[in-house]
Amino acid sequence: MKALLWIAVCLALAATPAAAEEDVDLELVFLADASGSIDNGEILFQRRGYAEALQDPLILSAITKGAYGRIAVAYVEWGDVYHQDVVVGWTVIDGPESAATFGAALEAAPRLAFGRNSISAALLKGAELINDPTHEGFRKVIDFSGDSANNWNGPDLEDARQAVLAEGIVINGLAILCRYCETGRAGWGDLEAEYAERIIGGPGAFVVSAVDRPSFAEAVRRKILLEVAGETPKQGRRIANCSQNIYNMC
Image (cartoon, rainbow, N blue to C red; front, side):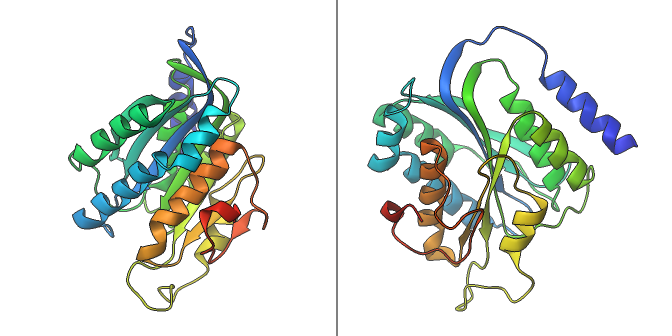
C-alpha cells in the first residue's frame, strides 16, 4: 500500500500542469544501468555508445523527417532507490550540432549513481521527466537498459510499470546479456524474456539484446533508430541475439 501511494504521489507531482514550451516528435528518456554490476569503464563505454548513436547519419535523417524535425532526449543513470541521476537533462536534437553537443556533455559528466537495482524507481524517474512540461512530444518513450531484471529495492516493479504505462508512455528495453563471456550469455535465465514479461510495455514495445560488449553500440543505434522512426521491429516484441546491420532495421 505504501509503495502504491508513493508511486501515485510521484506521478501526481510530475504531472503538474503548465504550458508546453516546445513541440517535438518524440520525448525519449534513456535509463542506463549504473548499478553495482557496472564499473566506471563500462559507464563511459555505455555513454559513448549513446553519444555516437545519436550522431549516426541514419538516425539524424530519421529525426529530420519527423513532423517537427526534432526530438527531445534526456539521459539518466540508475542504481538503487536513492540513485537516479540525470546525467544530461532535456536536450533538443535537430541536427549534427545539437547531437554532438549532447554527446560531449554526456561523456564529460561525472558518475553519481550507484547501488543495487531499483528498476521500479528508475521507471518512475523516467515518467517524472517525461511529464515535465518543457517539451510536448507526439510520442513518449522510456528506453531502459540493464543486465538484470531484478528489482531489489523500492516500489513493486509491476506497480511502477503499470503506473508508467497508464501515463501513455511506451517502455522499450535493451537487455545486456553478457559483457565478457564468449557465448554471449552469462549462463542464467532468459533476460530478453524477462524484459518482455516484466519491464517493457505499451503499443509497439520491444526488446533489443546486446549479446556481448562489441555488439552493444550497434544494439543502441538500432533501438534508437526504431524509436525515432516509430517503427516496430520485423521480429515483433522480442529481438533476441540480433547482430544484423542497423540498416536492416532488425
